[in-house]
Length: 551
Image (tube, rainbow, N blue to C red; front, side, top):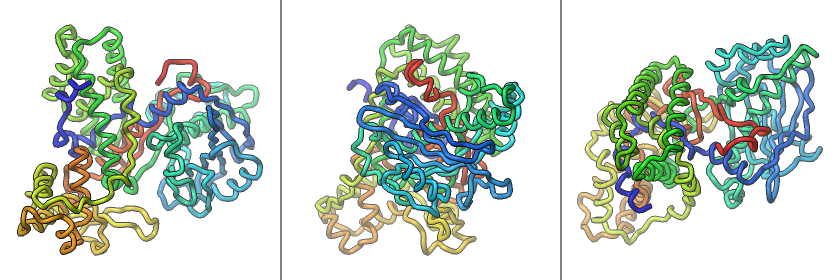
């Protein structure tokens, strides 16, 4: 659709943290791609193992079979004392632990996994495992649901809506961690080729396990009086997740992948805006999406002041959008979707603008779902530096793609107040206060803006026709930034156009952007450095997947 190019938002507008930190999940999110693939390919689900005692201790296997193979989530339930329950990454015990197994595990596999998976980082898995994860109960709600079901009653619907999950994962590891299969080993397999498909499948099957577990415990306690969770309440539950700074640098370290994610979403929006008319089915789907967004905003709670302000903006903005769509939107005029978007950019706060984007994409699956195939990346292919490029061209790239960074005084504490480093204890990224904490000497090179400014300064005395290779012989410290600049020249959405070491940086903006691409909802910061979210809330369960329309 060549005409869509005229409707694309520029990277300078899209790649700012204040907007990225307002991202909402769309139908291109990775969990939605997974659900559509499983339905289209008629994956078959079963639970060949359920060996749980009356305390919920034991093991279970959830299997998905498809053309060419099978994948199985192996789940272990534990009796965890309250004093050992923690969402922190340094925890050593959990209510449940999981591994996604490549194939169908036999007894030997289960025994091996049982000896290792409950230990998580302290154990080891093999390349037969695609992910390793763990979860804790949302204790008050979990116990309430078990008690009510055991007594033959349904749990309080308001409590379920407010929390939205019975368990929350505290880590879902993949891509070679602790011996699991490396991404390169599965990237060529159609079932897992889209980003984070193994991790999303693991979480989806974990959701089934949590509901099975509360019903099992209720039946063990209540016997014949016990009832199962009703379909509506069951459907409203997702899987919670606690995520911290370890995820934040991912978007910086994978510029081509970030470009492909953002480009796909922006192309989807441009295609919708380019439509010359709006059909009745699309209009009805849009209104349904708005209704769902309004209901989600009403139930979405947060104690963090930044997110509280954004939620207020979202609720006010959605109400304003609903009034405009019902009264003033000329749906029969030419390019009605573009008119709606242009109105939104003027009259809606950023939070509501990004919610509008998701709602506009929702009824246009036939137009945009194919873009999901463009969201993976072979980043190694872009790693090499073109040493023949001339300094004049490198200067032009910096001025075009890094103009946001070149005028900043990085000697001012406001613009360099923080630094990224690797925690010695957990070997994961952390954020330090440069003028209050030691460790800046071990700073990670995530200061893209400062690097771009330093490279520009290094080019000041260089002749225009100097090859980049000669420049880097004299200044090898600029290799990383030269590589990033050359990538950005070919991938316009590769760079976050903000200062990632500024004193006012909100790392949660990075987290929200990435989590929205996963498909996360209920973004709830617990500080500026870690958040809780929900995954798969409202999605079908394995036994429901083939009974309804594609997600």
